[in-house]
Length: 292
Image 1 (cartoon, one colour):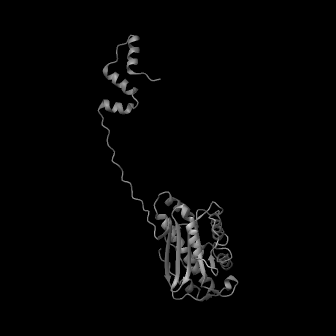
Image 2 (cartoon, one colour):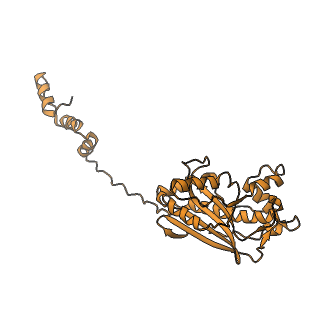
Image 3 (cartoon, helix red, strand yellow):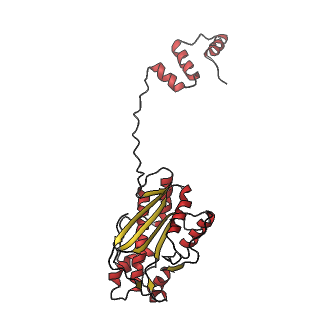
């Protein structure tokens, strides 16, 4: 229960006490005010110091690419090469000659590794052989509503004679994309396409040779690729969510670089696996990765 100054003084007089001296009265008044600290500062003549506003650092929101639909970016580049063969030896895959025309190397960056309907792909990268070299294309969504547009654009990259090439894509990337197409009420363009998963022939050749058959391990030992400042794939979901929440784009640009290298590595790994041991190194290094 709060008491006013007048009530307090009346109670003091009834109890036989004199009225509180002026300084005490002012202190009592200040204590009874809603903001006692501010009142005490005024009584003592202390002025409130103005705090300088701290500068807000500018956020780096720049992402490369062309916006081809609201929230959907397309990046495209061609790594030059004059040595792309018409077909490669498919013995490593237990098949006959494999024509390079129609091959589409692809990889996704997703919000998690568990799969299921709660996991979505926020980036799709693909490479294919074109006259003069290896073409690399990447799709990136910068907000959730752009996912259907990304799926439609990726489906335009596929034809009836497309042969998908991936690394563990049969078990992860392709089923995940098929789920996203169903949820978007779009027919999946992946159904019925041939799919060469390089993980399995790589395991047959290198199991027990190195510590594991992860793509990064194969890159380092078989292809001589050493990534500099690479962002681990496990950090890709956090980088994308950070950007969606208004954060900097620096980490997301590194995810683009990671994905770019992945689809270039797939083409180089195909050449490496299909080449005789005498020229495996030469064919495995025919494409030089450049920054997107």
